Length: 325
Ligand code: GLY
Figure 1 (cartoon, rainbow, N blue to C red):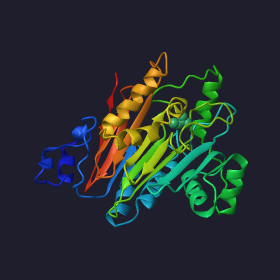
Figure 2: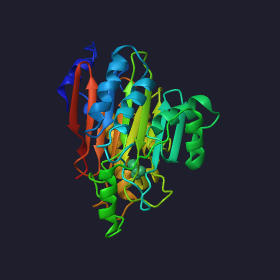
Figure 3: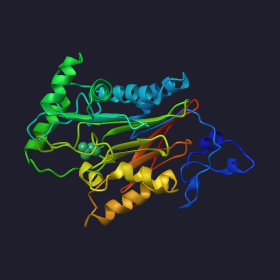
């Protein structure tokens, strides 16, 4: 567990200064301590979360909002054509079309989402517009693209040459069998706590590579890919969306924290639930990150290989999540 987290906890007469992160409050049923210092913190899925966190933490340290931090952070990854599971350069579906899914949520319950969006490289920014500019939460497909264009987003080709080549290689067999930690290495999900004590989260992906045209995973679904509640904390998912949706994964992680589980324990309990719902999980990867309202955080995955990035104080670090196997 990251030792730097110790600095995050205020030493109190309750002796909380001896606690470290994530598993610090892992006793089930134990009430989380309430007298922790609120400092900005940002946590993201996977190695590419480092780039998102760098932008997000700067915003947070300037007393910006968690909402701006998570949106501007994940946009960096959406814009990076080398990340082939998010935004520009994402792997296409089996028809060769790149379609994007994203959602964003604030701790007060405000949220927005787009799914099956084509030709717009920043679905997270469109999701924020849905939240802020419409009476709706989710807009999909042609309607989402029409809305994005109306909001001034630029239409562009998202299929890069490297992703097109990979697609052509895949076409030789055409077998859909997601590879854990490789083709589905995966959604960028980012959670942040700002200096005002508010939480927000963002989740954005091109979805499972070579998916059926029209397939939507967990990432744009509030409660599955992302859930945020200022009363408790926030959680987000990565991995095979179908498995996350079956358990309303992120909402369940937040509810487990509400009932006293530590962030890591809450992520683990939903992974156990996913395991129980699948006969064979040898090829199945799902990972969760969680951030509690007092800044405690944790992560857990079914399979090894899932990493999460943490931005706190002046440091950015990447950690392997604890896994079931
Ligand atoms: N978690 C990304 C997806 O399954 O679409």
